[in-house]
Length: 460
Image (cartoon, rainbow, N blue to C red; front, side, top):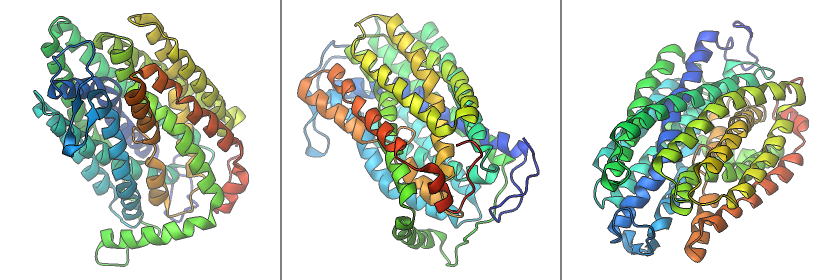
């Protein structure tokens, strides 16, 4: 990997190795929110708080009661999936605008810092979600999840400036792998806290530990965001803002980009494929802990151990699939991962209740394909974006990435409300992987890359 390649983007030389390491570290920083908060603690925690507000005693085996946020009748078990869906509907408006502003600003690092620190502060705010304050918990999650997505848009937009087309799969995979390693370490620390302070028969103690584990993720996120802010440099915007207000100018540019996207139908076709299969991936990530606790009756300790296994195997899986992509191409590697995702979802339906080992084994299988499918999708999409519009296009991309999918959680929540079965809900996700596989197969990638004005990598 060279450090002084000449860029073909008009922005000068590609990033040095030090800058790339700084970029990797934002994966390390934000992984705390994705793993400790979304994948493990938030689903069971917010569901338990909501069930208390519905009148069910803490630790009840079943809760068929409803809550009434803003006058709506919602099953307590469906509240968290619905909040996830609402957060994504809001990101539809926020993330593309954030991308347009990032493309036209010479201060990307400031945008990254603002979004990251706002999300971290909202996550730390869960310290005040006590008793029956399920509405406060939902509001804080909306702020944190939207801010998380906004920061990722800016973060992703750096990728084409870090290297040429042949190195992006490797760089993207390394960043994702480091993120899983960071997530593993924080979850391990939280597991130690559960073992030391957790008392299985004391449901309130367990809920308190979950709350402070969520807060620890906010502290981690804020602390390690300082590393990329120090090591990365600003890149001049290819299309700098010509107005006095970069935000207003960003809105105008977004409108022009939406109209201009019709000139790149193959890029949109790839984005459609990604939105479909990634919706399935993100739904598994978002709701796995709720499925394990509510349907399978697994303890918080088991859930944490499972996610630790996922994080550890994902670290190695991301690196391994990145190397496989160098031999057979990124798209073929992603297609293979979708076949394995389908097998995982089908296997989840048959998992026995109150049996930790099969659930942990399935988590290990998820980890192997999780990192590679996400990292390679990110680098593939970078090849399809017209130069100077990385932020805007990644804004649309991020709408269905990193915990911000909405069709999958919505389908899951609706199926649960009708059937009162999480198993039936999980089976519905097969359709997302199957449809995404077919759509990705139909994308003529080399032609799509050339149509976007970019040079295809040697192995595609």
